[in-house]
Length: 428
Image (cartoon, rainbow, N blue to C red):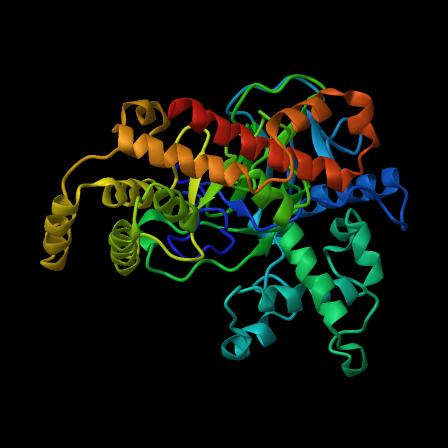
């Protein structure tokens, strides 16, 4: 993806995966469950799904197979023969997609479209999914058989006696887990995002940052195409978007072990940079001047009390915000007055203050010192240091005794600390 997932400038809220440029699509949330909890045996479920694929015209390459064996989690897709870049893995006709437009109550959903509008755009799909789950002759029944958690949804459509938060949460989790959102064309940026839809076969694929397959959109089909060589017996991976480990664990329940997630990031809270700068003031007058500069940055919407600077492994994702903050907090008093006056007159700055990782050692010494102090303060917020976690990860016996949740949390912290320690080296 060309655009990394990026935190809002000053909000500090949870980011979402950046929109994927066509023909790529971002998966909205959780990966497939780890295994069946009942219902059909695995072989029967897969066989039924494959028969259904033939019936609806979903073309699956003979070089791939659906399986739970050889996958990182739950059902996945594995290469039966070696696959080369550009080869078609499968093609899904649009008629096989499950959406508010293809379900059997599409007319009703269209008539009530105005009443079903929401920020997420999920409500029509939730209703379509609920109806098809309960319809005895739903054409998507064999597709649902690969979703073991659907067995818990035994409520009749629109039954007023079972409306509950738990039922709603189950349905939302299903949409988050399996739905895709088709990207807009490049010239349609001002349009509303496309509503989510269910893409059989595509939702089977698991995620890694260095994925080897990509979903392409056309008028009649959605095609999964290999983007890298895939050896026989190796798993086929799609991408859920450019996501840091903390985003993956928050939205999907897993993290990629270091150094696999090339999209990983670490946050430096904006107020931490302010605190680091205050540490360097000598008296009350210098503190007041620094507070004036911080207020100026707030008014320019470069910083905020709840915001964070986002540092990637190869770039600063909030480059403009961090560069401007370092410049304003470090510039001489007279220069700041001139800078503030020019900003008040609407004059734009043309100076190039690149914060690419390779350029950080070339920054002014005052900038590097402030950035280093900010990193040190950030590292103090962790309960353990980097070496402690390196030792834990390298000790396979001790690591294996941790729960799954503890292992994933450890991988998140370790990746963040590696990025922060890289910054320490670059600013030394």
